[in-house]
Amino acid sequence: MAVEVLPLDKMKESVGQELGVTDWFQMDQKRINTFAECTLDDQWIHVDEEAAKNGPFGQTIAHGYLTVSLLSYFAADYAVLPEGAVAAINYGMNKLRLINPVNSDAKIRDQIVLTDVVEKSGGRVLVTTTHTVEIEGKEKPACVAEVLTMFFTQ
Image 1 (cartoon, rainbow, N blue to C red):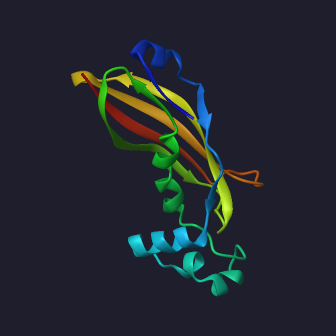
Image 2: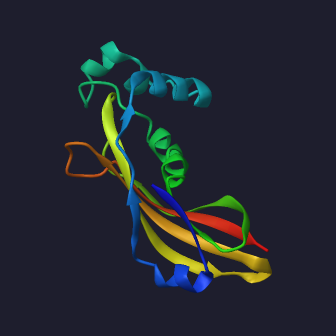
């Protein structure tokens, strides 16, 4: 796990490289229930364990946006920052696909690839990373997202 600070030209040379793969993270029912409370999304497929047994997945599943919300947590372990960065903000996403549901108690991890680095005016640097959230034991990932982060440099 490493956060690396690089000159802009070195960052650009690193485009296409994997930044890292996180440790496995267990998606437990308590986290799913807490997310449901925070977002007011208490659909039965997420929070009603008895009803979900008879649902399409045989048990409760995590909210797709719960999985997405963990991307910044995962990225904290594997990030590349431009030299002189003083602040960073989430800038959005180019693409987001929720491909496979994450069952309660499943383990997930994030493979992070540096996809693009664009120098902007005013000392800003727009960095794109591609996140592929894998589910332990599943062929298809839970999520693939192109995440944008805007860095402000001195």
